[in-house]
Length: 388
Image: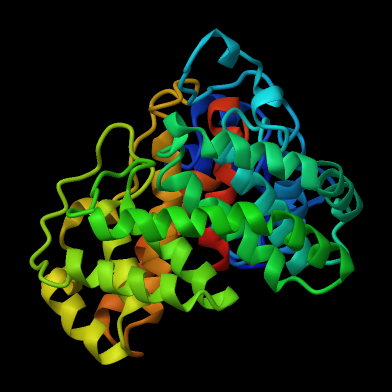
């Protein structure tokens, strides 16, 4: 922190300070600090609140995130299709294949982009972007469009399409609509429901035969997918799915102990170890989780495994894989905050997790926008961390 909460700091000193601390690249330090909605411009200087940048969600940040998502939700290109061809007739552009989720570079990012804007609209009904959000959703969430999305998923060669990451985000989107008051969200929820039910069926079919978890830090991570799907199941009364997820999580992870955290991988945006702990927090009673957590991270009070508490370095944000690491900083902060809240007040591990979460957020938030390789998805994970 530079000075007290009422200090006035010239813009160049702020940039230099952030650059020294690694929160800004040299290029960003010379340019516009995107993530400074917490700072107030007063006669050419910035007055800082309690931290260098807000690590809590504010209406100003929500507005910036909403505008960012709206800029790419209906942007068809560039587009990375995960598309299996059964024949030449399957060679079609993204919008023909996916009349709802054709934007945001790829299918799953478009799904969680809609989750993001609807989540923000639910939190801040007076958001300046709310009318545009409603109009965009209303245009795309139609029964014919949902039917086409379902038809694509029902093709025999697409049974595993977007499993499990896209599945989980589709359920999160459905759960968000289910929880929102008002006629429009209720209508959109009803329209999307057949697609959500198909994904529920896919999870119910897949999990019993999934002998092992996927512990990678990318889209295939099963702990992340089950965490989102469980929240949907509990919110919407899908008790069979909730029970299956709880049983599967325990089957996969209950016996794990003394996690070494051999991470990060060079293209990861999730921490396999923290994500596993977050899933077990969700499926366990508080006392059971406390015992499991003690076994899983026995030296956490000492800041070990140390690799989990140092923000990762991102060398090239125009490289889609390397840019994943900005997401890793955000998702670590999300998990560290939620796990800290599960510990008793005064537990020294809370401070370790909370300090680390702040450091990870300060490292990542300036980079939510800037290059499309991160810009099309990072705000979603920033919201998870800021809300936690």
